[in-house]
Length: 397
Image (cartoon, rainbow, N blue to C red; front, side):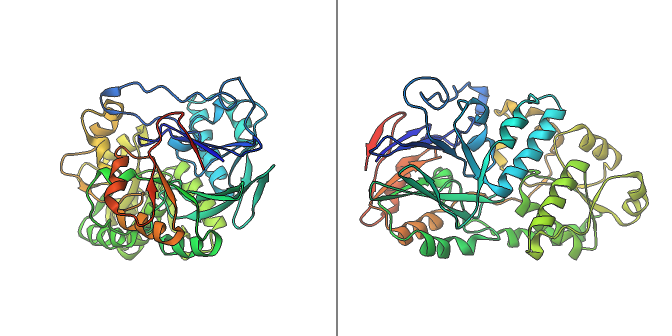
């Protein structure tokens, strides 16, 4: 088995390719590069047989979740290569892209590509010639994110995608690995947070308790967070109910939450008391206050001007507020200096990575999705060799 990693030593834009001894080739994720400080241009990955003609075409592409740094180059995949993604991830991604199409930021033809995606769900196995792929659903700030177990040539490789264990579904990650994976020969592991502090991250439920206190102490609350961070919105919604505040968003967000409400059996994701804004809500908003989800758009700016006496909560990665991130200048303009920052990472902590390594006992660990892969050496992982791959470098397992 041959493993290659592209853009592995950065956050976002990573592609992993795996080729069996018989020549079957698959790719895992096909992400666009994330914006960088000072708007430095990073070239998107180009791979023969996957995004550019040349050599044998890939047999399939597997997407771990719908975040743009994992799926953003989907329209660059050569025609005829099948794409696989989680069932719910596909539907959420369709809704996101539909909004971008309406805003003329994405061509209409792209919807046909997304509609053609194949879907997977646990515990179904997908066989591409002599490679068998098993998805394992995990906790992440993207709903319906997956790890992928790849088996061929008598070897087992686990690709973690993006994951964490401090979210609402975090407790299920290790039992799922024990049940469906076991010991592996190679672990391809994200290391997003390893270049940051080593403190244990807050759980989403701890954020809920903090939010409830803030909601009770303030009348008009605006919250800026990602429209697809369903876990975050779920705990904010529950906090608003506890604080007896009406929970408001725009039509697009409401449609997305109604979809989640329709497919989930968990009470956490039952969004029965969410309202899209209309003038019919003005009376209750003016009298009792509200919690409103906003984004960097015209609607949000209008509402902020209408209710200048407000409590503003910023619930995203703080890095986007760095003035060197010129890409987020318009977002920075609507976030006041005295905002309350209420956030926790969507990525694995040191503790979570250690738990995964102890569970699957890899002989080799290949870091991806992190700016400081050397940090893996400091984790003292027993009986595990760390192998940092440069772009297009081949590792034979």
